[in-house]
Length: 364
Ligand SMILES: NC(=O)c1ccc[n+]([C@@H]2O[C@H](COP(=O)([O-])OP(=O)(O)OC[C@H]3O[C@@H](n4cnc5c(N)ncnc54)[C@H](O)[C@@H]3O)[C@@H](O)[C@H]2O)c1
Ligand SMILES: [Zn+2]
Image (cartoon, protein in one colour):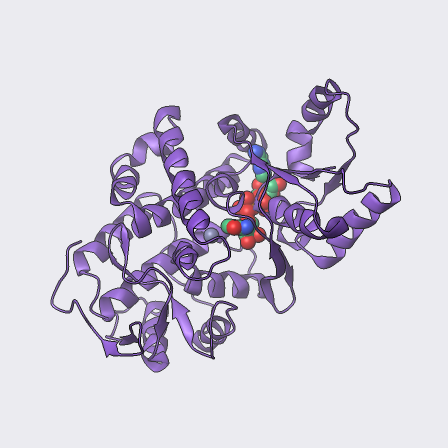
């Protein structure tokens, strides 16, 4: 069962179908509208009904051909169809390659928030072909550039939390990466996927460590959720929201005294070098952002959690940290909304102790 969105199918669908014929196996396919609204329970039901109507059973394998939207939706369908069938990911966006297709998180959105209904269901295989990325320039070169950079934001994130040398490649080879030179692009994608695979293998169901992959996402998801709920004409992509989140969460770490200012500067400069956004859009309201963050499903016991890096390539704790002073975080976001300097905030380290263990400076 092949699932693709209309854009991807128009570019690669017929080639895929005709090549697949050679296997002699039956291939059904369904083409869905493109965009985040497709990651929806009703759309899931439509695909499932199509599969049931065509008498698919536990021998079925679902194939997701597309970006993270199609990957998340198809993965969730595969997770629940006949109590779980195998699925294959064919990611066609950079973000889906380096992030969404690896790790087995599948979900749909609800009116209450993104990815709130889903399951962990690992793909049997993930095939990546950089050639898919050429499809964007055939469609819309401006959008292509934004989608590409949104994927780069996730690679910067992976370097910043786990591997300083990957971060340095992103930092130092901006032009080569933007020109999409295959050697450097292959290197950063391969390394990024390897790190994600390592982290999710150590902690497949996000018991602790895996949460570090959400660096930049606490604030990023709040911004993303709100952008989707306004009538803002030109919304932000997931990776763009993560870029804003990384900048703010870096500032949070600095305000806590665990991250040196020079490291914050490096992260901000790197994100800016790719012309990714670094500021919260003006029309968003601070209390809406805070409310969104408080509603994050990763919080526990009503406490807000946020991943904190203490140097580039390393997290303060091998999990998301509790943010104990919400008022202070609120001030931080408030000031970030107005692009003003950030005020100090304190967080509770493991054990609930309010502390600034590396106040006074730590390596960048
Ligand atoms: N499961 C996870 O771990 C995980 C991680 C990160 C993000 N996500 C999810 O991924 C989604 C975002 O994924 P995305 O950025 O890939 O968005 P997307 O799937 O909406 O794709 C972006 C756009 O690009 C088009 N497109 C895709 N591939 C193309 C190609 N090769 N050529 C031309 N056009 C192409 C699509 O039709 C779509 O319009 C979000 O829903 C997010 O929540 C999931
Ligand atoms: Zn992400």
